[in-house]
Amino acid sequence: MWKSSWTRWSAVLGFALGGFFDGILLHQILQWHHLMSLVPGVADMRMQVLWDGYFHALMYVIAAMGLWGLWRAHKHAGETWGRPLFGALLVGFGLWHVVDNIASHWVLGIHRIKLDSPNPLVWDLIWFTVFGLVPLAIGWLMLRRPPSIGRRLSESTIAVLALSTLTLTAGAWSSKPPPNRPFTTVVFAPGTEPQQVLSAVAAADARLVWADPAMGVVVVDVPPERRWSFYRTGALLVGGSGLPAACFNWSRV
Image (cartoon, rainbow, N blue to C red; front, side, top):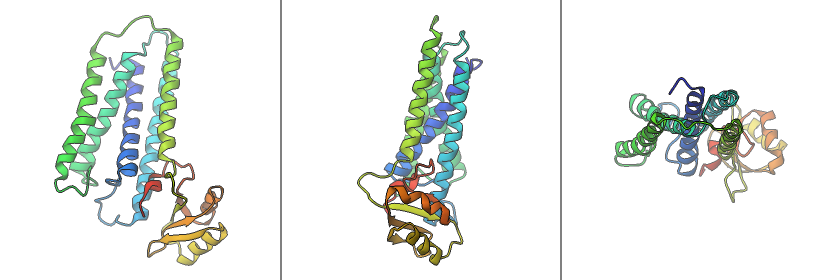
């Protein structure tokens, strides 16, 4: 079954969607952890946000690879798109959570599912089972069943377009500014002097709302169309600017 390009590239895309699901739900909406929450020396919010951004950017690259492979695969009339495609998606989705739990939680120890839990291992095991083993098993069973015959090529095109839309929607959601919050979070590069930060705020005609002691992370009241101007004055990431690296858009700071 893995000889089919449909299944291979669908699993790659499912892996990326699993990462998007993890980042959007756990990093942004629930805010249970950041990617590097337990790494010594990375307690600074600026670095936490930056590594979350790198994580989302990597998921974009993997998702783009999966979509590119599926678009090439749909041109082969002998490929079937139905159950093998969605089964492989589930395999990839489950594989992400299995790899993330084993590597990030138990081997490297860079974060846990729910950091403030008195027993984080319980949450790790729940996530490992519900979002890792269960989708992996269901997808594997779907792949082992004989594929249906006679699907039209146009149907595979529709499937790829639908998956592209789903992936782009997930990516756009990860870049979405928080609802009902007029403020923008800006993360400046290490070494940026407080006076430079204040100058950047003034240049954007923004109002400073909050800042960490080192002025590395600031929250400002600025018109949406002027957010991009911070990149010209030393900002690494700007909330709501449309970048994939926007986990901090949901920060409670």
